[in-house]
Image 1 (cartoon, rainbow, N blue to C red):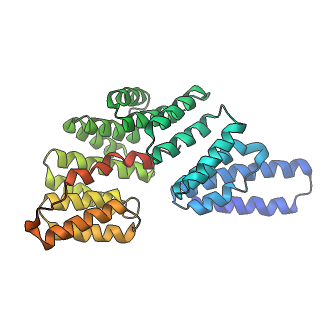
Image 2 (image 1 turned 90 degrees about the horizontal axis):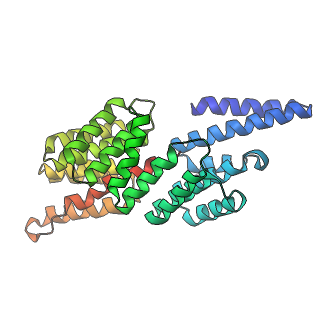
Image 3 (image 1 turned 60 degrees about the vertical axis):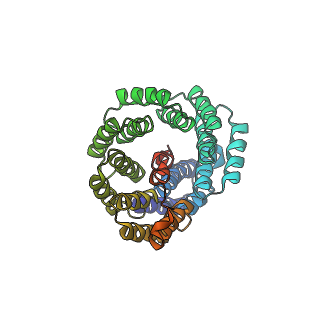
Length: 319
């Protein structure tokens, strides 16, 4: 898809250089901006955030300024430049105070920063100004409610979304996450299994990561250690470079099986791929210390580290 969009992009650019007629040139410029938006969002899905930011910065201000603010803000979030992202969203909201996409973007930023109550306020604003009945602000509100600890309220929204979209793997996985957080592990397992059945190869890989992370957590909660280990390894096989949470899961599953050396090996591999993940470094160090001195009584708290599983939903909140 990315290569196709790039070919169209360069083709329109070449035509623009040759065209003299103003009206035709204007039409091509508008078409080029539309392609830029599609291309930038595809770059998001590929994790190429600097390229995405560069593309958004060239989008015409006159026609697509609102989406330009949003896209640049999301790119900056993914790059960890949170203050710059806040500045972009706030600047955009001064020009478009009733923009549901910009309120959504600011909500995403606040959620990344752990301010779930402010995130909830932003998503409620987004819902208020949503004129196209997009389900995304409702989904985002449910995730903010989960972050605030209001699991039953979040479940109500997810249930409403599932009534409209019963086969949506993202909503099924989120229902599983809600169930896990409420202590209903068997129910969670059934929703994650349904989500995996409905997950296809062309689905967002972030959703796939969320499903595998949730399945592993549910199996381990239920004492089904081997199942947890197998699903963790399956998730890593399908998405080896997507998210560190899958390495957390695999390490935790090996640890629960009593295979500490294997747990350390998989966590070392994860740290190489995601050197910025401090929690994984802590997990690895705790296991290494325990292996060096098993009588020290310093065994790590498994489920403390597995709390990251419940937070994986943040990665999928983009549209």
